[in-house]
Length: 254
Image (cartoon, rainbow, N blue to C red; front, side):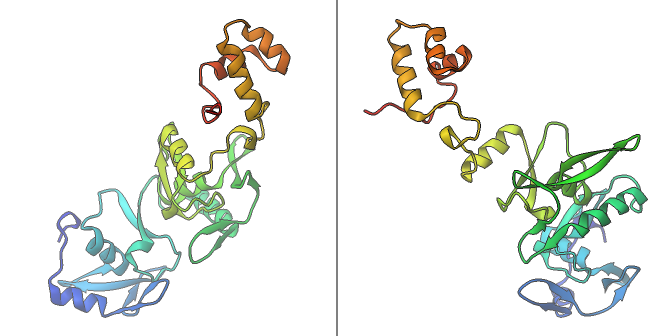
């Protein structure tokens, strides 16, 4: 029986689910347990399979080569399909440095029924954890990116790690997904997290001033240098306002 073409007959599948105790949170395996650490196990055609792996296969049909099934809830006996996710195996599974990082990481993580909340250092709402960069040096890295790498695998160059839950302090691996810079910006805008105009801490002008700048520049009698001097900003800023590259949400009254 291969993962790529997995199926169970109806009687065997019914027997499998009969060994599960479903709660509002986890679905706990109540039958045989094997291995170290212990995991639920179920016999199919004379062969023992990990119960959480069978649950994933029944829900999704296959497990790609080089991937393993992990639990986002941290409960080693849970087989609830939406608590399971795939992670690509990289390096040695028992790599000591990764194990040490995992222990440090989980000590600073508070698991709730929904999100895994970061309890360590935060910057602008996002968790941060110091990671070694060689030669005895350390550098703070976003905790949600570290979570993705620990549980899901490597992050391709140029990709962002985004939150499904819209909670910046969440580090739960199945709440995270990869996106490009444009997708990350679009996701933030869709969720109302993009601060603009005077809501931005770096804003140098007000909406009223922007409208007046556009009015003056549309007359064609003043240069960007003259207008910039009046508002004590750079000529390039005035030029970007004039061309509609910034402050696009501000429109003059009809």
